[in-house]
Length: 89
Image (cartoon, rainbow, N blue to C red; front, top):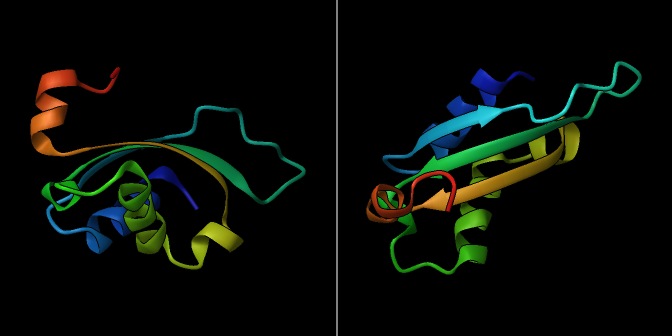
């Protein structure tokens, strides 16, 4: 699985989401599981707790969280929060 596929799954599974996915670590050639990092911006996060926002991302990734993705670092924002704080908040 590559970063573009993870982005596609998140954007497909969360309404009006914009996802930027990177691989913050060098992949381990001996393991199939990979580490990803995502910044996800969506109005669907409005009024949700951080845990609920992250659950939406996990739900969008479906079974890939247990088969293809070993770890997912994520930052989630509403569009307003992203505009105010940016990806470094």
